[in-house]
Image (cartoon, rainbow, N blue to C red; front, side):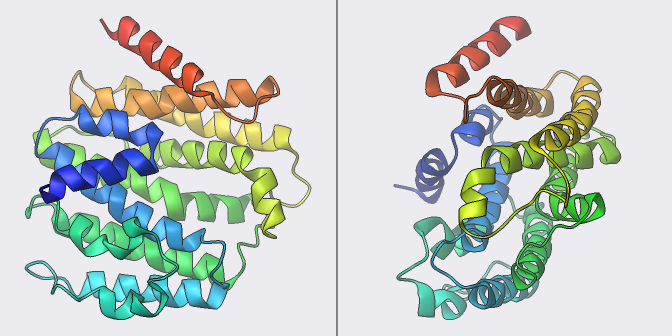
Amino acid sequence: MDLYGDALNILKETSRTFYIPIIQLPLGLQEAVASAYLCLRAIDEIEDHPDLDNFTKAKLLHTISLTLQAGGDGFAVDAFYKGLKSHEHLLPEVSLRIREWAILAPATIAPRIWDATAAMADRMAYWAETNWIIRSESDLDRYTFGVAGAVGLMLSDLWAWYDGTQTNRLHAVGFGRGLQAVNIIRNHSEDLVRGVDFFPEGWSAKDLHHYARRNLALADAYTSALPAGPALDFCQIPLTLAYGTLDAMANGKNKLSRSDVLALLDQLTNTSK
């Protein structure tokens, strides 16, 4: 199997939310977004790894960042392996193969993806070093920007690179923050078990729901301003699923079921016709 076919299989295994909108993108943009997603998923798996201590997570993430910053015409075959080999028995395939995901994107946009991944790896390392202590809304804003709002900015750059689509960058940040806030609410119980609480001091689940919806309102504005085309088609799916997840949790569910996801996607498809 070729690299891209292999990448799509890994993508399908790691995200039901983003697999569908990515495979619907036109070729060229599809490879770029898949490359970005898999690179970011590679470092995300390190940040969230249950069997790595915080010091080790930070070290691995900084090493990946430095390797990406040294990229030129691609990367040597062992460029990342040298920094990851001591923990290869613990790391998932998507993390160990980050070099392949980094070179998957078209050469004219690949360095933007390397830059975004390197910056995010360093931010994740910072949060690992501080054990993800969130005391205030400003801390929460910093975290949700670092791991998600910045993704919105990168995607805006990808839309502009592909067909010149222009977007509101403040709304892009809100889009990312909103999606991340939904993840924080959904994973709150699991995070507490591992000793991490992303809720600012004194905040309840209701406060986080308000935070999520306030930022998703910016995502609505971002999406509403997009012209018909691949960027709009892509953005509508995670936004619809985010709202669906918030509604499900407000009704006592932990997350959307597979049938819920399919129903929302079917509704979105019918609305778009």
